[in-house]
Length: 609
View 1 (cartoon, one colour):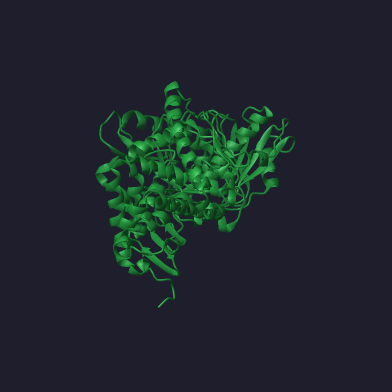
View 2: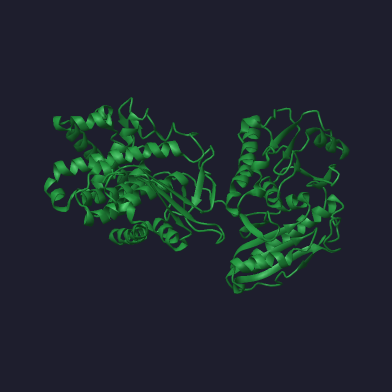
């Protein structure tokens, strides 16, 4: 949801939010409920739908790892509302929430709406709505919850806490049965159970004052856990309660001062609880202002980048390289120049119409770190040439840049295809450079072995653009980009021994790779819907599949969790080992794949005899 999708104006006095994950919420019914609770329901009261009801989009029907998109909707809505309010000069508009959604989603949504007037309404069996929670209502004096299992004093140990809220019915045994499958019993530091003083019942909640008291007690429990169990890594939270109460409890959450909350949801089969989301403190990254030392280092690296660029342009301008220039449509690149100073503000890297390159200071520092990792200067020079050709080739692709592809699609398939071609042509130019400059060395080791070395450098320059190390998550398309080129480079490694004279244009044919079964979520770095995956295996029940299509052959590696985990570990820990050790590690991994599917090494074109 975007800020412009929220229909409020400077005159708006309140906003009705109809959360329709499970079923539609009538706007007339919502407005009538406001009137019955003593609030004017029409004049200057806007209404918006969060997640319009569509049976095929209900989170309840998704696997646990696919719930993140629903939680991302909550995040986008809260951010869009705040943005819209700030644009209109409104300070925390009152919200009337009518929710037909799973309890973890209700809980999370209200956790994202702190410090604002909030009323949450509850729907009865007959469909009527009534006020269930009002932040303005004072808590009743008598406790709503009986709290069991909360440690009375500080205690040591590392592990987790199980927190069960059973208001409507008893769920403790089911929750603990689920927890026992994912956590060793010895790692559970405490099991805390909150239930109404009068006992779990569908009628245990009667008044908003009771709910206000429940919120106060719930907050006290979360704070006490943080104070008394410093070694707890997380709190597993399961609830069985009216939706309005679950939402109200979300208002007690403060991720900055409490343990991460792992939200559990009763599965679609009603037999077990699944992990669907983690609420934790978000690390706010403030753009770093470059120091004088940063700029000095960046300027030194930029000088070397300009040298490599100048050498590459001079080589491409030679008459014997004219066919190569025509092939990559590199005329604008031949006219291009690199700025003499590092860029300190965000700007497109390559404005091909103006023929200017602007290298940001932070990118230059990353390139400097890469130079230290690679060792031989020529490897680093080749990385730069691969990168420069990649970006220049995007000009041929209708001026594609990271600034104008946004919004192409959910999984970035179009950009992925464009990037593959740009990568491939970079490798082709690098091979031509090596033949021209190091012809004897290429002849000695063979073309395929040369290609292997080039692609390893291509993977290194790709790594520079990951914002954090170790890399714990990637956009889906970037993960596929790694998999594609790891497949190629490891295949070349084997072919260098078995078929060293294989033709380059044949061996750079497109390969399509898909890795299914990793925890996924909406990319928080993008304003459009783009998926990211965590480089780790999730629920052991979730099947893991590597599917690969190459030269008219489709192969599947089904549920080889050890192979996938080894691959993910290599991607995460890329910089933790010397480069030659990392390469050997990945080669051995793919050799296991080729042993299972030897046809992938066939150098004959499909159908050839």
